Every structure is written in C-alpha cells, then in structure tokens.
Image (cartoon, rainbow, N blue to C red; front, side, top):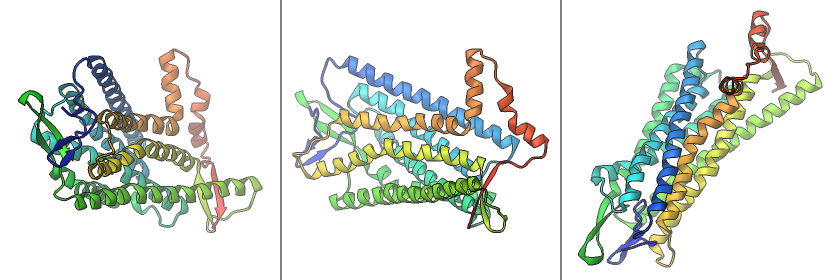
Length: 358
C-alpha cells in the first residue's frame, strides 16, 4: 500500500489527499486528528454564529454599512467551509475513500468555493472601505441593489472558477496488497498542461491579485488615517468641502478588517504553496508530499474559519466582548464607559471626526 507517497497506477502518480494508508497501530494518531478537527469545527460554528448574531443585532438598531454586510458574507462562507470537516474526519479513520463519487466531487468543490468567496469578500471590503473613506464615490456600494449585485458576483465568479475541481475530482480504484483494492478521492486532470494552467491562473487571480488589491487599499487607508491624525494634532482649520472625514467608526472597522486580512494571508499561504508543490510532485517523482503533512496544513487553514470571527468581534465589538466577559466572570459591568456614546447622542454632539485636506 502507498504510505507517504502518492498512489501510483502505471506511469502516473495520484496524490491521495485525505486518504492516508498508515498501516496498524495508529489509533492514537487518529484520535488526535479527530480531536483537532472537532475542536476547530465547534469553535468555528460558535464563533461565526456569534459574529452573525452581533451583526444582526447591529442591523436591527441601524442599517449595516456595506463593509459589515460583506463581513457577514465572509462569516457565512466560513460556515460553508467547515462543513467539509466531518467528511475529512471519516476518511482519516477509514483511510480508503468510502463516501462515494458524489461526495468526492462536491467536497473539494465546496472547500475551494468557500475559500474563494472569503478572499473575494476581503478584497471587496478593502475596496469599499477605501472608496467610503476617501469619498471617491458617495456610498455607491451602500445601496441595496449594488450590494446584492456585488454579493451575487462574488459567489457566481467563485462557483464558476472552482467548477473544474467538481468535474475532475473523482474516485480512483487502485490495487493493494493481498489482491485487495483501495479507493482514493483524487484530482485527475485530462492533461498535465491543463492542470498547470488552472493552478497558476487560480493562484494568481484568486490569491496574488486580491492580495495586491487588499494591501494597496489598506495602505492608502493607512495613509489617510495617519494624515488625518496629524492634521487633527496640528489643529488645522477645516471646511467639509475641502477635507476627507475619518470617523472613529471608520478607524474601528479599519482595524478589524486589517486584522482579518493579516490572519488570512498567514493561514492560507501554506495551503496555496502546498497545492503548487503537489503539482510539481506529479511531474517530479523524486519530490514527495506526505498526506499527513497535507492534512495538518489543511487543518491550519480550517483554523482560519474559527479565528476570523474571534479577531473581528474582539477588534470591532471590543466593548461588547468586555461586557460579555465581565458578565461571565461575575464582575459588575462598568456602565460609565459603555454609555459614553449614549450620553454624547443625548447631548446632540457630533461623533469625533478627523479631517485631512484633499
């Protein structure tokens, strides 16, 4: 049976992905893998449900901005992303693929679809924040029709781009020891050239380009916020017709989204590199990628779905999180700081704004 290397059939080597034929006496390892999967699965469900609930409460109080709607879309994509975890846990125990052809086609498609939606949502959020803060267009994405069209575009584009994975992931039956037969769910492209083109194009269009858009947008936003603070500290006179306003709400949302961006690239870069290495392995037989290594890298990527809502909620709803923690520990909640905004509103004061010259 193939262990650490891909499963060969004739002159072709198939990478087994989540199937890992490790022989006997690996029960402890399987228990460890299942525990890690279950922990991330539960944390992701609770965290994303918590994030959706907080945004829904905010929706009831006053309409969400486009950026928060896109973050809500990101949480939904994360929930879809982790639906693959129970199926992966089953395969880690059975080793041979026993889930059938339909699950084989859909599992990796759903994973890649939701991951693509996450990166496209982050890109859309960064662009919307830059447009909103710089006032290049007056809240164009804030309109319901434009926002709905943007969300449909994100999901439709991701669904079409990842469709080849649904088509070409299939169950392959391979001979094993003692005349037995083993099954793996693997990616079988019609041609090696087509696989190269798709992998490189996908990594470029859905990872490098969105990453460049995100970095550029947040760099511009950071320049605006720094210049805004310098202008405020210098005590410059201003006129709304000649200045850009950056509110405390913008600062808070910018900080939360910046944290999401950093965590995404840290936790998704390994799997993108691994996929490219698997492509190289199919061409160079002397390069071996262990299925167990692939599993732990994928697990690290799944952890991003659990980390995203935690980072966003702590960064954006920091005061609300502090209140929840104080309630859980039995300590009284300090109402003075929490009612600062309410008092300010009752006195009809404007929220704190910083201004910079265009």
